[in-house]
Picture 1: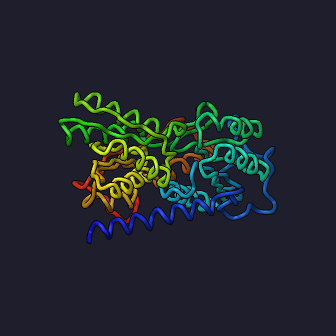
Picture 2: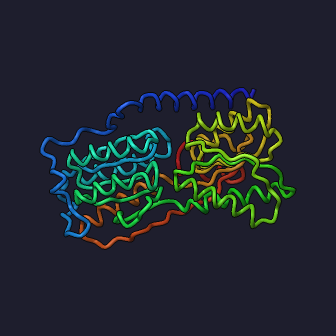
Picture 3: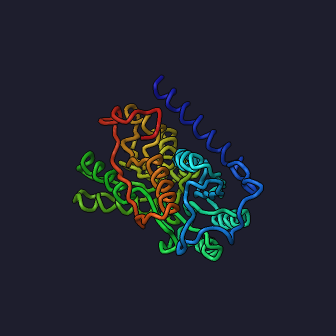
Length: 341
């Protein structure tokens, strides 16, 4: 009965993700309130090299873009940024490129035409977003990055993000301790997402340093998406049913792998990265073994508050790392399962 209940909950979560993705297709309408009628033009926006207006003035148009606006992690992060922005009397214009780099560039160009004064940036593709960053730079619009680094960090005034390497590393270390005899493993990554690449590198480095013999018998690009991960994991498990573990580059990927393994009747140890409520709720009773946890709320508030400090003329740090750590069945009660930490 417990297995049926977990499967039902997971299916419902996947259906919600699919429906949300369908709604984000096409031209991806902005999520936030339309900018005020008397918004300043891009030419009037503050440049990083010039003296910025005081944050207390309010009435600014602030732009926001992330790789996937339907991912619960980014929903929570955007909400944290929005709270800070609106507390300063400003408007946040948020757009979702739905993991499409070309769409993200088009949407940033649209936000420049709307006259945004400042931009919060999370790239679909670290290098692919550079043309959009060039447009923002030409328009003298300061950029603040979060969660995933861009290909050239010199474009950004400041960046706040999780220690993604460590988030993967703690998963690999935990796997080596729990499987001292080693075995075959699967990796579901996303090469265009620098954050996921860093997590995968950390995971693989940890198992290498452990001295335990693990063999990566399958590695596929899951695009950070639950449905895609389910399809990739199904194919990989068909060819490799005896794997001892699966590493997913984020929690939606881990959930997709979990559904595939459950359907195949196998039970590898599955690790994700995020520390999402959905994953934490499954840690005690399923093959979900752990998640390299981060805090989207902390990331969002940190980068938003940093932007306003800069607008007030303060000197800010160029790189702000946010702590990551492992959550398993042993410590999940400390963090709860109904919200992000």
